[in-house]
Image 1 (cartoon, rainbow, N blue to C red):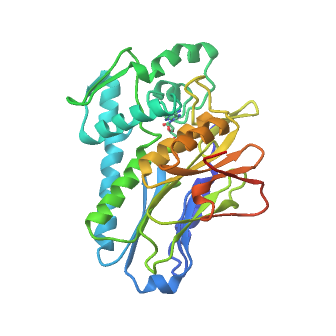
Image 2 (cartoon, rainbow, N blue to C red; image 1 turned 120 degrees about the vertical axis):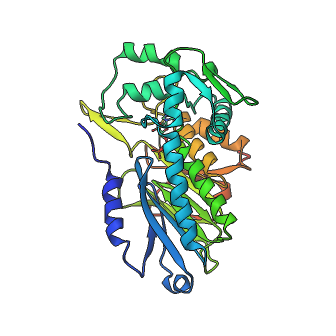
Image 3 (spheres, helix red, strand yellow; image 1 turned 90 degrees about the vertical axis):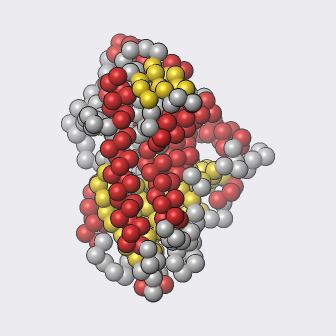
Length: 361
Ligand code: ADP
Ligand code: MG
């Protein structure tokens, strides 16, 4: 049975609220950006638009005299990338590559492929963009959810091996070593899209704006009044609680968790982030991973990968890359692990056990 995920419900509430002028909200299942300082905003032109694309609800917002054009172009860019990267749309490039077992890539998919390959390497295989045959077997691609048999999983695992994806940088030629291999940029597509929108905003001279692509929040500059954006990180346990609020500027705040897309069978919950080592939904002990970095694609890719890795690996990965990103990790017992770079920017809500991670311990 198809489960209605809670964030869709919350989104619809926010759609209804969007006409409310004294509260400026952008919302998602995992993170929320909010600005209640209405006076500071009212002196600036603001344009905001809600879009449904990439299977999720999105909001793009820009401030200043170019705000209108900026959100118009942002919507066009979202539509373009959705059409290019959709795994299910028969006219998309990714669909064609998957049907034909490879091909010559366009600029965007070439970049996404190069990025996916480097994430695969750096995360020890936790980020696996060849995971698609397994995503299909679990029914996450079309909503016909089912737990595959052990035999099916054993048969498909050899097809999800990224070391069998061959890619030539110079010619942009992609090929698969085994028949039946297929790729899926779902783990980074929204982060890439929000990076593109930030670039687009900048090129138009916009200095203040934000996008919220289904939980992937990326902010440009500060709020128009010069103060930091507030990004709320949703709690996986409850849809009306937050893990906390992050003060942010010029960064992508992206959360992955098993609580957004999932189904239940025989009393067990199965979610959509798969562990490439087992073929089953990741059960690493982490239930929510938020990555804060300057790049959407990095925050998106790592939020998926660190959820697969589990806390100890995630912490050591961060220690080796602490100049690139910060993280908020939540383990099954509700403890929050916050990396030291955002310690002063993240305000934890409620009474939670909180542990700060430093590079030297
Ligand atoms: P969402 O896109 O739902 O916000 P994520 O960014 O974590 O969440 O991406 C999940 C998507 O990434 C899945 O829907 C699937 O397309 C893909 N995916 C699932 N498992 C992995 C994995 N181990 N590595 C890379 N991509 C994955
Ligand atoms: Mg991701």
